Image (cartoon, rainbow, N blue to C red; front, side, top):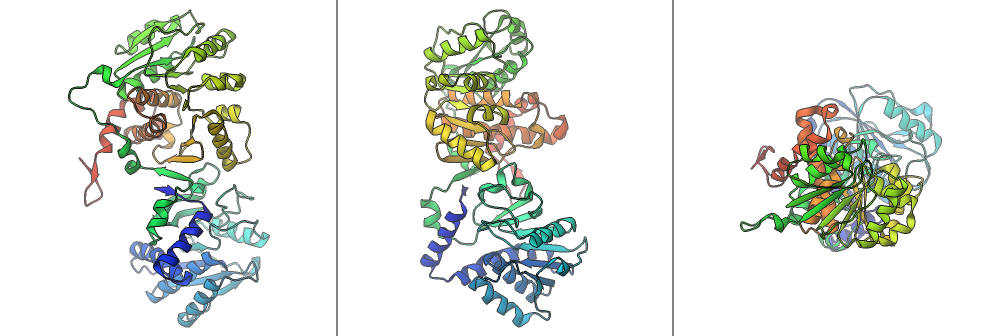
Amino acid sequence: MKIFSAQQMRMADEATMVSAKITSLELMERAATQIFNLIHSRLQGSPIMIHVFCGIGNNGGDGLVVSRLLLEHGYNVKTYIVNFSDNRSQEFLSNYDRLKEIAKDWPIQLKCEEDFPQLKREDIIIDAIFGIGLNRPLVPWVVSLIKHLNTSRCFKLSVDIPSGLYSDKAPDDPEGVIFANVTVTFQLPKLVFFLPETGMYTQDLEVIDIGLDRNFLMQNPGIGVLINKNEILPLYRPRHKFSHKGTYGHCVVIGGSYGKIGSVVLATKAALKTGAGLVTAYIPECGYEVLQTTVPEAMVIADSDDELEEITLDFTPAAIGIGIGLGTGEKTISAFEEFLKENTSPLVIDADGINILAKKPEFLDKLPKKTILTPHPKELERLVGKWKDDFDKIEKAKAFSKQYDCVVIIKGANSITVFEDQLYVNNTGNPGMATAGSGDVLTGMITSLLSQGYDPLHAAVFGVYLHGSSGDIAVQKTGFEGLIASEIISHIGPAFIELFKRPNVEGQQEK
């Protein structure tokens, strides 16, 4: 599913009005009716009190339509107009007049803190104050209103985006944004819902189809793609009957140092479980017995005692994953540099491999094209520099990707794979995966996919999705706190199987 910017959504609206020969007012009616249908299907005429807070632009116009439809279907509704300016959109004014025609009580005007209504915890709030077009700080009393709504502990539904949230930057006041229980957004998801600083403002996301022009949606690449099963299935490379282990590549996992051999164990196991035909672990001598004992399916090459001082291979691997547990000692850095000079295999670089690149940026020019980098937040900061917010972080990652022709994975709750100007936002995974070794597993999985012949970008996107899916399956047995990296590896196979399950009519999964 594509992700559009606010400007692209406005362009989609305009294209729809032209192609469908409808007015903006008719498009608003269509969109708000879909929100009403969703609410009505859940409440089924419940006598609960619904408070609809409307701004004075088009988001407020959506709220007025929802209020009118709720009243027409017998719901208890109070409508409030948040008068933060003298300017009103024409669509807002038209729907305001329509609402007044049927409402016993005209919309309540809010102009200051003294006007704030009393709310009961069992009430429902519909937030239609600001939409995705918000581009300036809120006036102080409106910030107070939002805080008032948040502290009410009512169930809150936001229309298109939580009010106070910008679509392209972090909020000015973190407390001046609606914390929505659910956000019902139009047609396509927005990037703001998937970033650490801004994703917390909506607990649940519903994307509703409002019939925007299909040709425009298909032809416009958007700013990114939300990765679900439908986006992954076309990437999958099925196996054939007459294949053998050589068909699926020989990958090498390079890393480890005294006390950090476990990271290589995890990456090596993950590479095997993800389907690589052959896997070799290249480690210091101190980890030899550990690898041979814990991963009998893998081959092992050992260097000096406690850290890698030389990295030389007498064959050309199909792919290499390097950096996990590697250390950043002078001898290891020197070995890493010589390795980069000689290497011609596709690369995945993680952990201390990234830290070495941050210390020695001149090494970056030696990376093969489409090298995959998998930093956690602090490693990314060392690589691209500090950022002012999550949007700036993404722009820095884009610039880095273009400069060095590489793929950058911004790891997090919704890991984002960045290649040049495109973003691939992952939609699997859970908080239990915030555990030691989880990143090592991801490195092994992506390296394995590379060795099997996947394009580097596809290997990164598929690997991130599969990693999250494995964690999602595992956590059903372990709970968040009980999930460890080894459990993620154990559920890689079930994650592959889950790819080909289809929902039955009850919404349950079946083969």
